[in-house]
Image 1 (cartoon, rainbow, N blue to C red):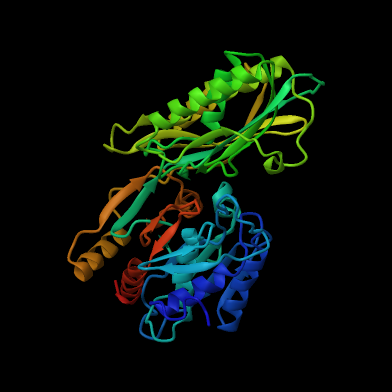
Image 2: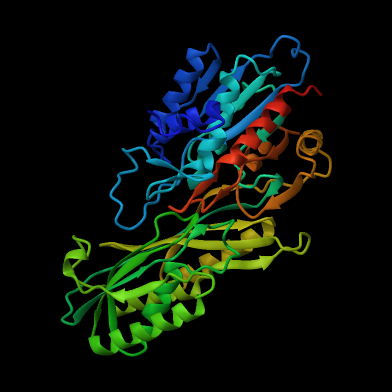
Length: 485
C-alpha cells in the first residue's frame, strides 16, 4: 500500500509520492526528468526535453476553450537534500521516506522535497485529468533551481505560446508573489600548504542549529555554524597559538548552515578547551530565544571523528587568513527595504565553509532587490577576499523579478481567491529567488504570479507540508484553469 493512498487530494499526492521515490538532488535530475517525459508520452502530450534535462509539456485546449489565452505553469524538479545527524541515506541514490503527521506531510529524517515537488505534482494532476476544462496548458519544469537556477537560465522557451505564467514555487497559502530579489553565488577560495607541527590536536563540533532557507529565514535571528566557527577560532587564537587542520560547515549555500566541525592543532590545549567552553556558553545565552538547541563541544570519542582528515596543519599565516575570512566577510541582513516596509533589501548567507587538503573554500548566496546594492556587496566581498590572500568569483547570477503595477493574471487569481475563500489574496514580494526573473527576461511582457500551499522548515529536515492547504490550493488552481477570461 502506498503511504499517501488515502490522503486527499489523491490526484495530487499520487504524483507527489511518485516523485518522492525518485532521487532528485540538483545536478542529478535525469531520472526524474525521464519520468516526466514518460508521463507526457503516455498521455499523448507534446513534450520537449533538452540536454540539461529541462522538460516542457503542452496540452492543447479543451473543447470550448480554444479561444482562451494559453496558460503556462512553472516549477522545478530538483530538491535540497539534507539529513538529520545520524541518518544514513544516500539521497543521490535513494528516495525519501514519507510519513503523515496529523495535518502535515514530512519525511523521516530528511528534507521532504515539497520545494518544489508539490508544484510539479499540482501540474501533473492538471495535465492528467480528463474532466478539468482548460485552455492550452504549458508546463515548464526546470533543473538545478536550488543551485543557481541553471535550468531556467539556459532553457529555450520557443515552444511556448502563453504570455501568462503561474509559478508554483511559493510556500505561503493566501499570498501571491509578484516580485523577488535577484542574486547569485559568491565563491571564495584560498590555496593552503601544510607542514608537520608537534602540538596537541583538538576536534570541535558545532551542532543543534535550526538552519533554514537563506532567504526566507534570514530575518529570524538564527545562528550560522559558519559564522560560529569563525568566532570560536578567533576566541581560541586569543589565548593560545593555533593552526587549522581541516573543517566542514554546511552543505548548501542557500541554506543557513546547521552544523559543522573543525580540527586544529593547539599549543595549549587546556587554555583552548577553557575558551571553547566559555564561548559556547556565551553563544547559547545569546541565541536562547532564536536558536535554543546550539551545542558546541570538543569530541572525545575518536571513533566519531571523520576518517581521512589531513594529518598536518596549514601555516600560521594561512590560519590567520582563514579566521579573517570567516570573521570579516559579512553575514545575514545587510539592509532593509525603504520602499517595502518589513522586507529585506540585501542579504547574504555563507552556507558552506570547508578546508580540504589543498584549499579552503566558502560559498554564499547573495540576494538583493536593488541591482546596484547587489553589485556593491559583491565588490565588498571581493575586496575582503583578495586582501586575505583569497580569490572570489560570482556564479549563477540571476535578475530580480520586478514588481509591475498592472497584471491581468494577478487580478484574475485575486478575484477567484476572494470569491472562493471570502478574503483578499495578499500580494507580496519576497527576499528569495524564484525563476520568474529569468523566465521574464526571455519572453517580453510575460505576466506572472507565484502561488503555493503552506510549507515550513524548507531546506531542513524539519520541512513539512500542510495537507489541508494542498487541498485548498488544488481546488483554487482547478478553478483558475476552468474560469474563462
